Image (cartoon, rainbow, N blue to C red; front, side):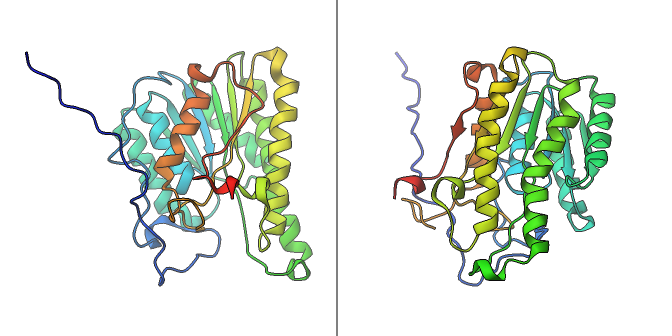
Length: 285
């Protein structure tokens, strides 16, 4: 009798740690300037048909967590539309589209500003026109700028952070909801900063706290329509905006994307209003 090879579970401890020479990028950050590059699951993620023939929109889908989610969704069988903000992110967006299409799925990219309701509507309408449906909305676009004192946060920075990180979520939901039917899913990207705070990201942390409560409130509002609303609140992640976890390293985007796949899939059909926090135990310290 021949025994099958024994499967070995991966040790989470090894991984890329921040380089002493790596500097944080000013927004909008781009993947191609990261050294070493982040892992979005390009070579590791294997789908199993969890999102077969569904259609998804992902804001901030050109890089970081958004790219990892786009790749995972496509390999699970979904068509994916990604939104991005700046011309500087065009090359990243093209790379993400390439990975979606390599998975055999249809892809759309759209440069737009989540702060503007009319631009959100145009993006959603474009995706629905091409895909013929909208099953999953991932609100992922975000902005952050470190300031070590609240006195240094200008009115312009404060308004820009809130308009991107929370107004944009409202506008995307308002644009997408008329196209979503029972069984559809809305996923919001929160943050560990909403759970712990962050002394140098006061405005950003405040918006993430708002996103968590927005998720719970919207879930209550849409429950009778059969639309689920959940939130993924990552800890430190290796992205262009990028320690403090038990493993002394940030997560790779590919390690966060499965949380979105789970919440978007039928496996999470009894989940709504939940905050799923893949933080590497950051919240337990």
